[in-house]
Image (cartoon, rainbow, N blue to C red; front, side, top):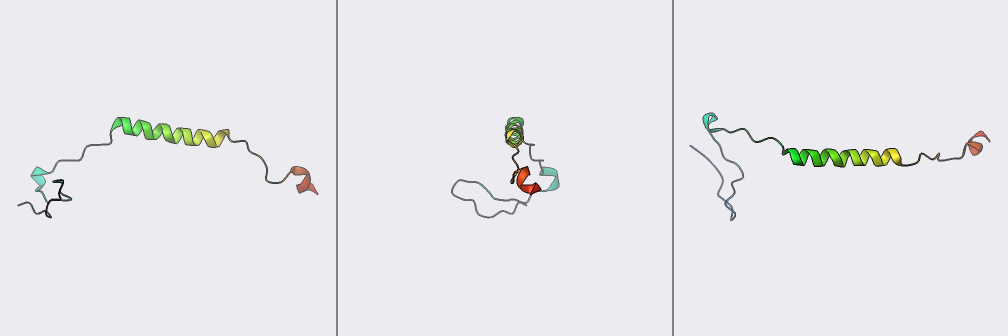
Length: 64
């Protein structure tokens, strides 16, 4: 017996109780999406590495 809230206008159910025999495991993440996110992370990290490392105070000021 499936118990679910009333369907919305789009016909999408938010949740539904199913028996263990009818359960289907959700599909994994799309490979294309994973590749895009990995590339974005690499670009973000690469940008940080390329930024010049300048000291906050000059070395001469610190020695004084």
